[in-house]
Image (cartoon, rainbow, N blue to C red; front, side):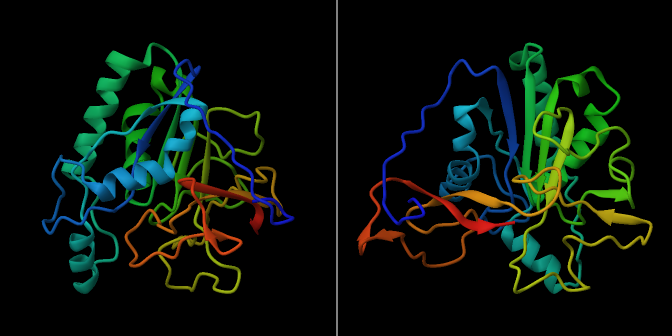
Length: 264
């Protein structure tokens, strides 16, 4: 949908010969009632991969391992018990680590790779980078790490691009930079984070939670090129969805792109 309100169809084509790979760890979406999810992906897991990862298939080969994550039910129980920082390093981390090791051994072939995570997925990838990637030959293959909405944030010493969470991987400051980190937590401009938020704040005054704007890596404000589910669904199951419409009619394509609707 253009700025003039007119709609045109854009066809996204997967690139089976993409020169790099994308390795994705999805956020907390499991509706299983157990503490950890099983290894049988259901509609919520499939939907979040469709919404958050599929579009990357125009630029990279896609790898999205299933893992036994802490479920929404487990997160709810932890919150009710006053536990604000659940331990993400159990069997879910072990599954993701096993998938990463298998990928390196059988699929990578010395190709560049983009790490992509959101929420619990970002928390797992942070530890994967610290324990399995930094200081190893695998670090040279990292094109970028997109670590979005990480609980506790990605921390750096005030005024620096590296240190804190990671010893060697700096923040991205330009689109041409590689081996770097894009990390942010998003809030509406009318509802900024409170002092008690788990996102975007650092408890240590010597550290700051990083915020790299993917639309303006060098800093400042820029318009976002937003892609949304045409049915109004989100990555997390949030209740009834309101579909997008043009001229009062539902959009027939699975996704809708609205350039310039949002800025960051």
